[in-house]
Image (tube, rainbow, N blue to C red; front, top):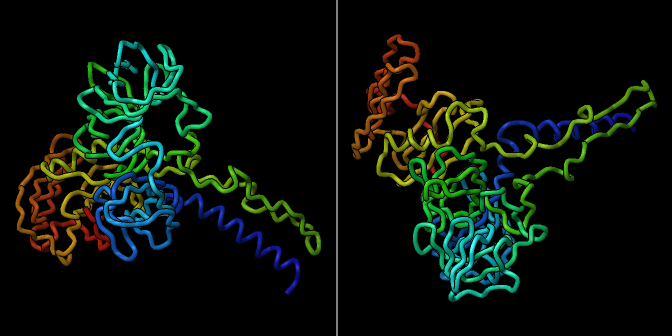
Length: 413
């Protein structure tokens, strides 16, 4: 086998790897980094359950004793709706279960109370570092004790060079904590309700995982500008990207003059940087935002718990919001039209005639005409009329409600 042939094969493989990193859904499987801090609730040979999330630890580096009740920090990735751990560590310093971390500017101090960006912080039982004065940016670890009120455990000066956060934008502060619930227009993080109606959602929202929110107080309400997964101890500007060799170019650029004097430049100096920041979960470029997808689901299941929402590609290239709710039900919503493509109920053997009839009407219509009247049995008239015409899809007779089945199932709730 000639040296020239081997060189061409090598160049081809490098180019193929670079191309794969740019394909939708490929990088997203490895870049959705998540962290959990909490007690182990149950265990099996290959899994632990933390904050009601089952975590695959079969390939993880285990750095602490695992037993029910032990407080751990899990670092891993969201892969196909499953949290796969990379490391499981003991929790010593930093964020504790149930706590939030606030980064903001001290506006006033009076006795045992600090005010940080409109948040009242009780420091009567806290360890307060020297140098905490009005005007300084501080980091607070504590628990919520009321709306915009916190009980601090620790207050220290903020060091942007060492921490995962950068200096907050003027008028804003950062809250990092466990995602407790997802609702219509709001999320609850570490016990505080935060409005996300106009927020940029950068990553999948998964209950029980740590999130970081850039917030301000608007009319007394915590209001988010941006929500992302919290990756503590990492560069805040990385957005949990897995960019090979720090944006290095995959360029062979070698001249193969042995036969044809042709240049074999792999992928034409293409960067191996998936989507600039590797995030396939931002709603930018989609007609339906994450919040709108949540509202669509709550229109059908008004009393359910939203367990996670992720923007992904399915069904031969369709961009969808994958929403997992209580009872292990998963809905896939077209991110451009808002149409519910599938509703998966594990254990139904693809027969979506369940017995729980909520008969929630989701009357959506792009131009004011189409009624999507569904019940939980999956039987309903999907009379969608995007432009005033009548297109009746009465699909109640095939036990699927006219919605394609997705055998992937939902993530355990």
